[in-house]
Amino acid sequence: MKDTQDIKKIYTGIQHQLNNLIPEKWESIYLYAAVMYQLNNLETWEMYFYYIPKGILKKNPINVYEVPNRFNVDEEEYLELVDNLCNTIKTLHKEYKNVYNKEWTNMVIAIKDSQFLIEYNDDNLIKSKYRSKDRHIIFKHKYLNIALQSFSKKERKIIQEYLDDEEYNMVYDRYFEYIPKEEVRNYIKYEKDDEFEENIYSTQLMEAQDSKVGIFRLIWNWLKQKRINKKKVGEPIREPMLDPKIQILSDIF
Image (cartoon, rainbow, N blue to C red):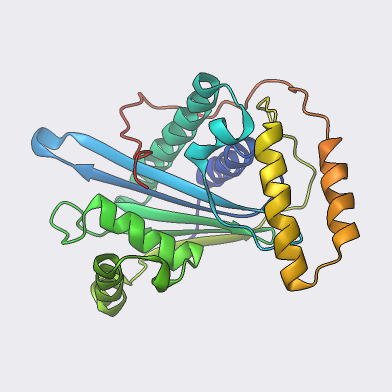
């Protein structure tokens, strides 16, 4: 399906907003958003996303809602940026409906190796046997590659049922593009907590010994990271916005 220039501009805005929400170098980003219509056509949303930090060692996915505590970010300022992203997703939903005369109910965005992929689905989420918490578990396994063994027995059963259910594994539309490589600065001010950073370093050091990664190289990279300038630059990019009435599921896991 060929996308209009207006929709492509929204895609670009989403890419910038996602980058601005991550105060460190990242390897990949995965976002889930869904819209549901309750009684009286009340529109409710759910949205969450994770990123994989870049590093010489394998990193675990970071829930975006952990960022304020991990990096001493002003929570009010940060959540305002998250709200802006939510509004941009709503703008995309409205524009998509206007252009193609149909609407998606849930979508996934993946950014990795300078590639931007978005998948749209039209699942009936209100009548679905999978609840919000179930969808979150499925997302973590399917897109974040979290092993089945990491989930409880009940959660593994939910994931397996989903994987075996062809109805929920069909993508009715997708968009793909390569993102030009450029140096993008973050727009949020942050400072790593020294104790938290020391704990990360100690963990990485032990992992490096186990995996036979060069210890001196690890120390050098850590010291280099300590010298990064953490000054705030400019103001966040503002994208077209709709009236925000969004439920953000930040309290799951």
